[in-house]
Length: 412
View (spheres, rainbow, N blue to C red):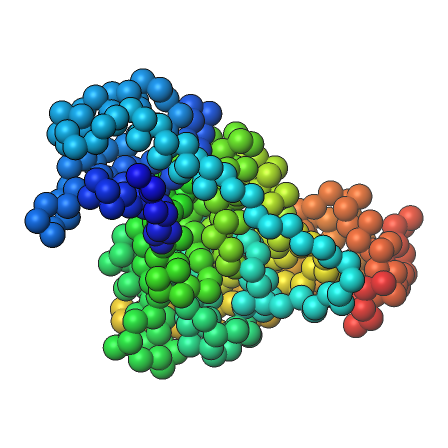
């Protein structure tokens, strides 16, 4: 009896010709309680493979293995010792699952330049994140990214390397995502007849579903993965570093670039917002972008500013601006100046807010007047003027207070 191993897209199969049996271990995942798998046992009857067992199994639990062996001894009596066979296959499956990757020497080759699946939002082969408040438009931005990558066409200033995209959805439904995609595609002039994005509905933690997700990625030759939202994909408390670490380990094993969509933690103002959950979110992502949106009541337009808040190995990119216009049958997106987006004036750099405040008050103003106009602390305004001394000059005095004017000089 020699079990022959076959690698499945979502697991392992052991075939034993002597007994006419096949053991398929799918959806393998490890946790504190042991190594788990969905196990299906097939038996050959007159040239046809029939199912004789299907259930979840803890490969590390002796009680589970003994119970399985006793059950199978009643169903298939041609195996001399089911207990020995089950123990052997569970051990060999665990060995395959835990087999280490090959290590390689580094340092003697020139490092390639940083590449992007979609510049500047998604670095090649690495996880990145879009995070923001509900209603900020981050899911719409992710779908724009999907279309740019799928069709290999620049959209609103985003530059793609063409590839196939899979949308792993934990928050809504296929019909909602498809409707949004078609409305965006229609406004951009793309064909609505061809498949655009591979949709996968997430129903359990990604760690438990990793084998199936990876199988779809391999079968459909997917290049980029969008996860909406990362908090539900973790399947546990986001403050739990172990759960978050396991999620990123599963994501790393998939081995393609990814965009994670996340909500924000509690904050006093938007400029202080961070992704919700463990600091591991910031540690494990290569690049993070905060999405800030504003849409006036009754307006068809959504203003969106996207701010680069974290990156490894390169300088942070400039802020991006977009305007989304919604109609009954289309959603149009165009690039916009992030400093002049309606409803997001307070998200502009402090130097621009100060300059606008000075202009609004007739061309000169004191620090107190600027602070009152912007609803900021006087010390904040004073620091902004001091750091941009070439842009703001003293034009006179009102009592003991300096009157400041603004020039077009750039920030120091």
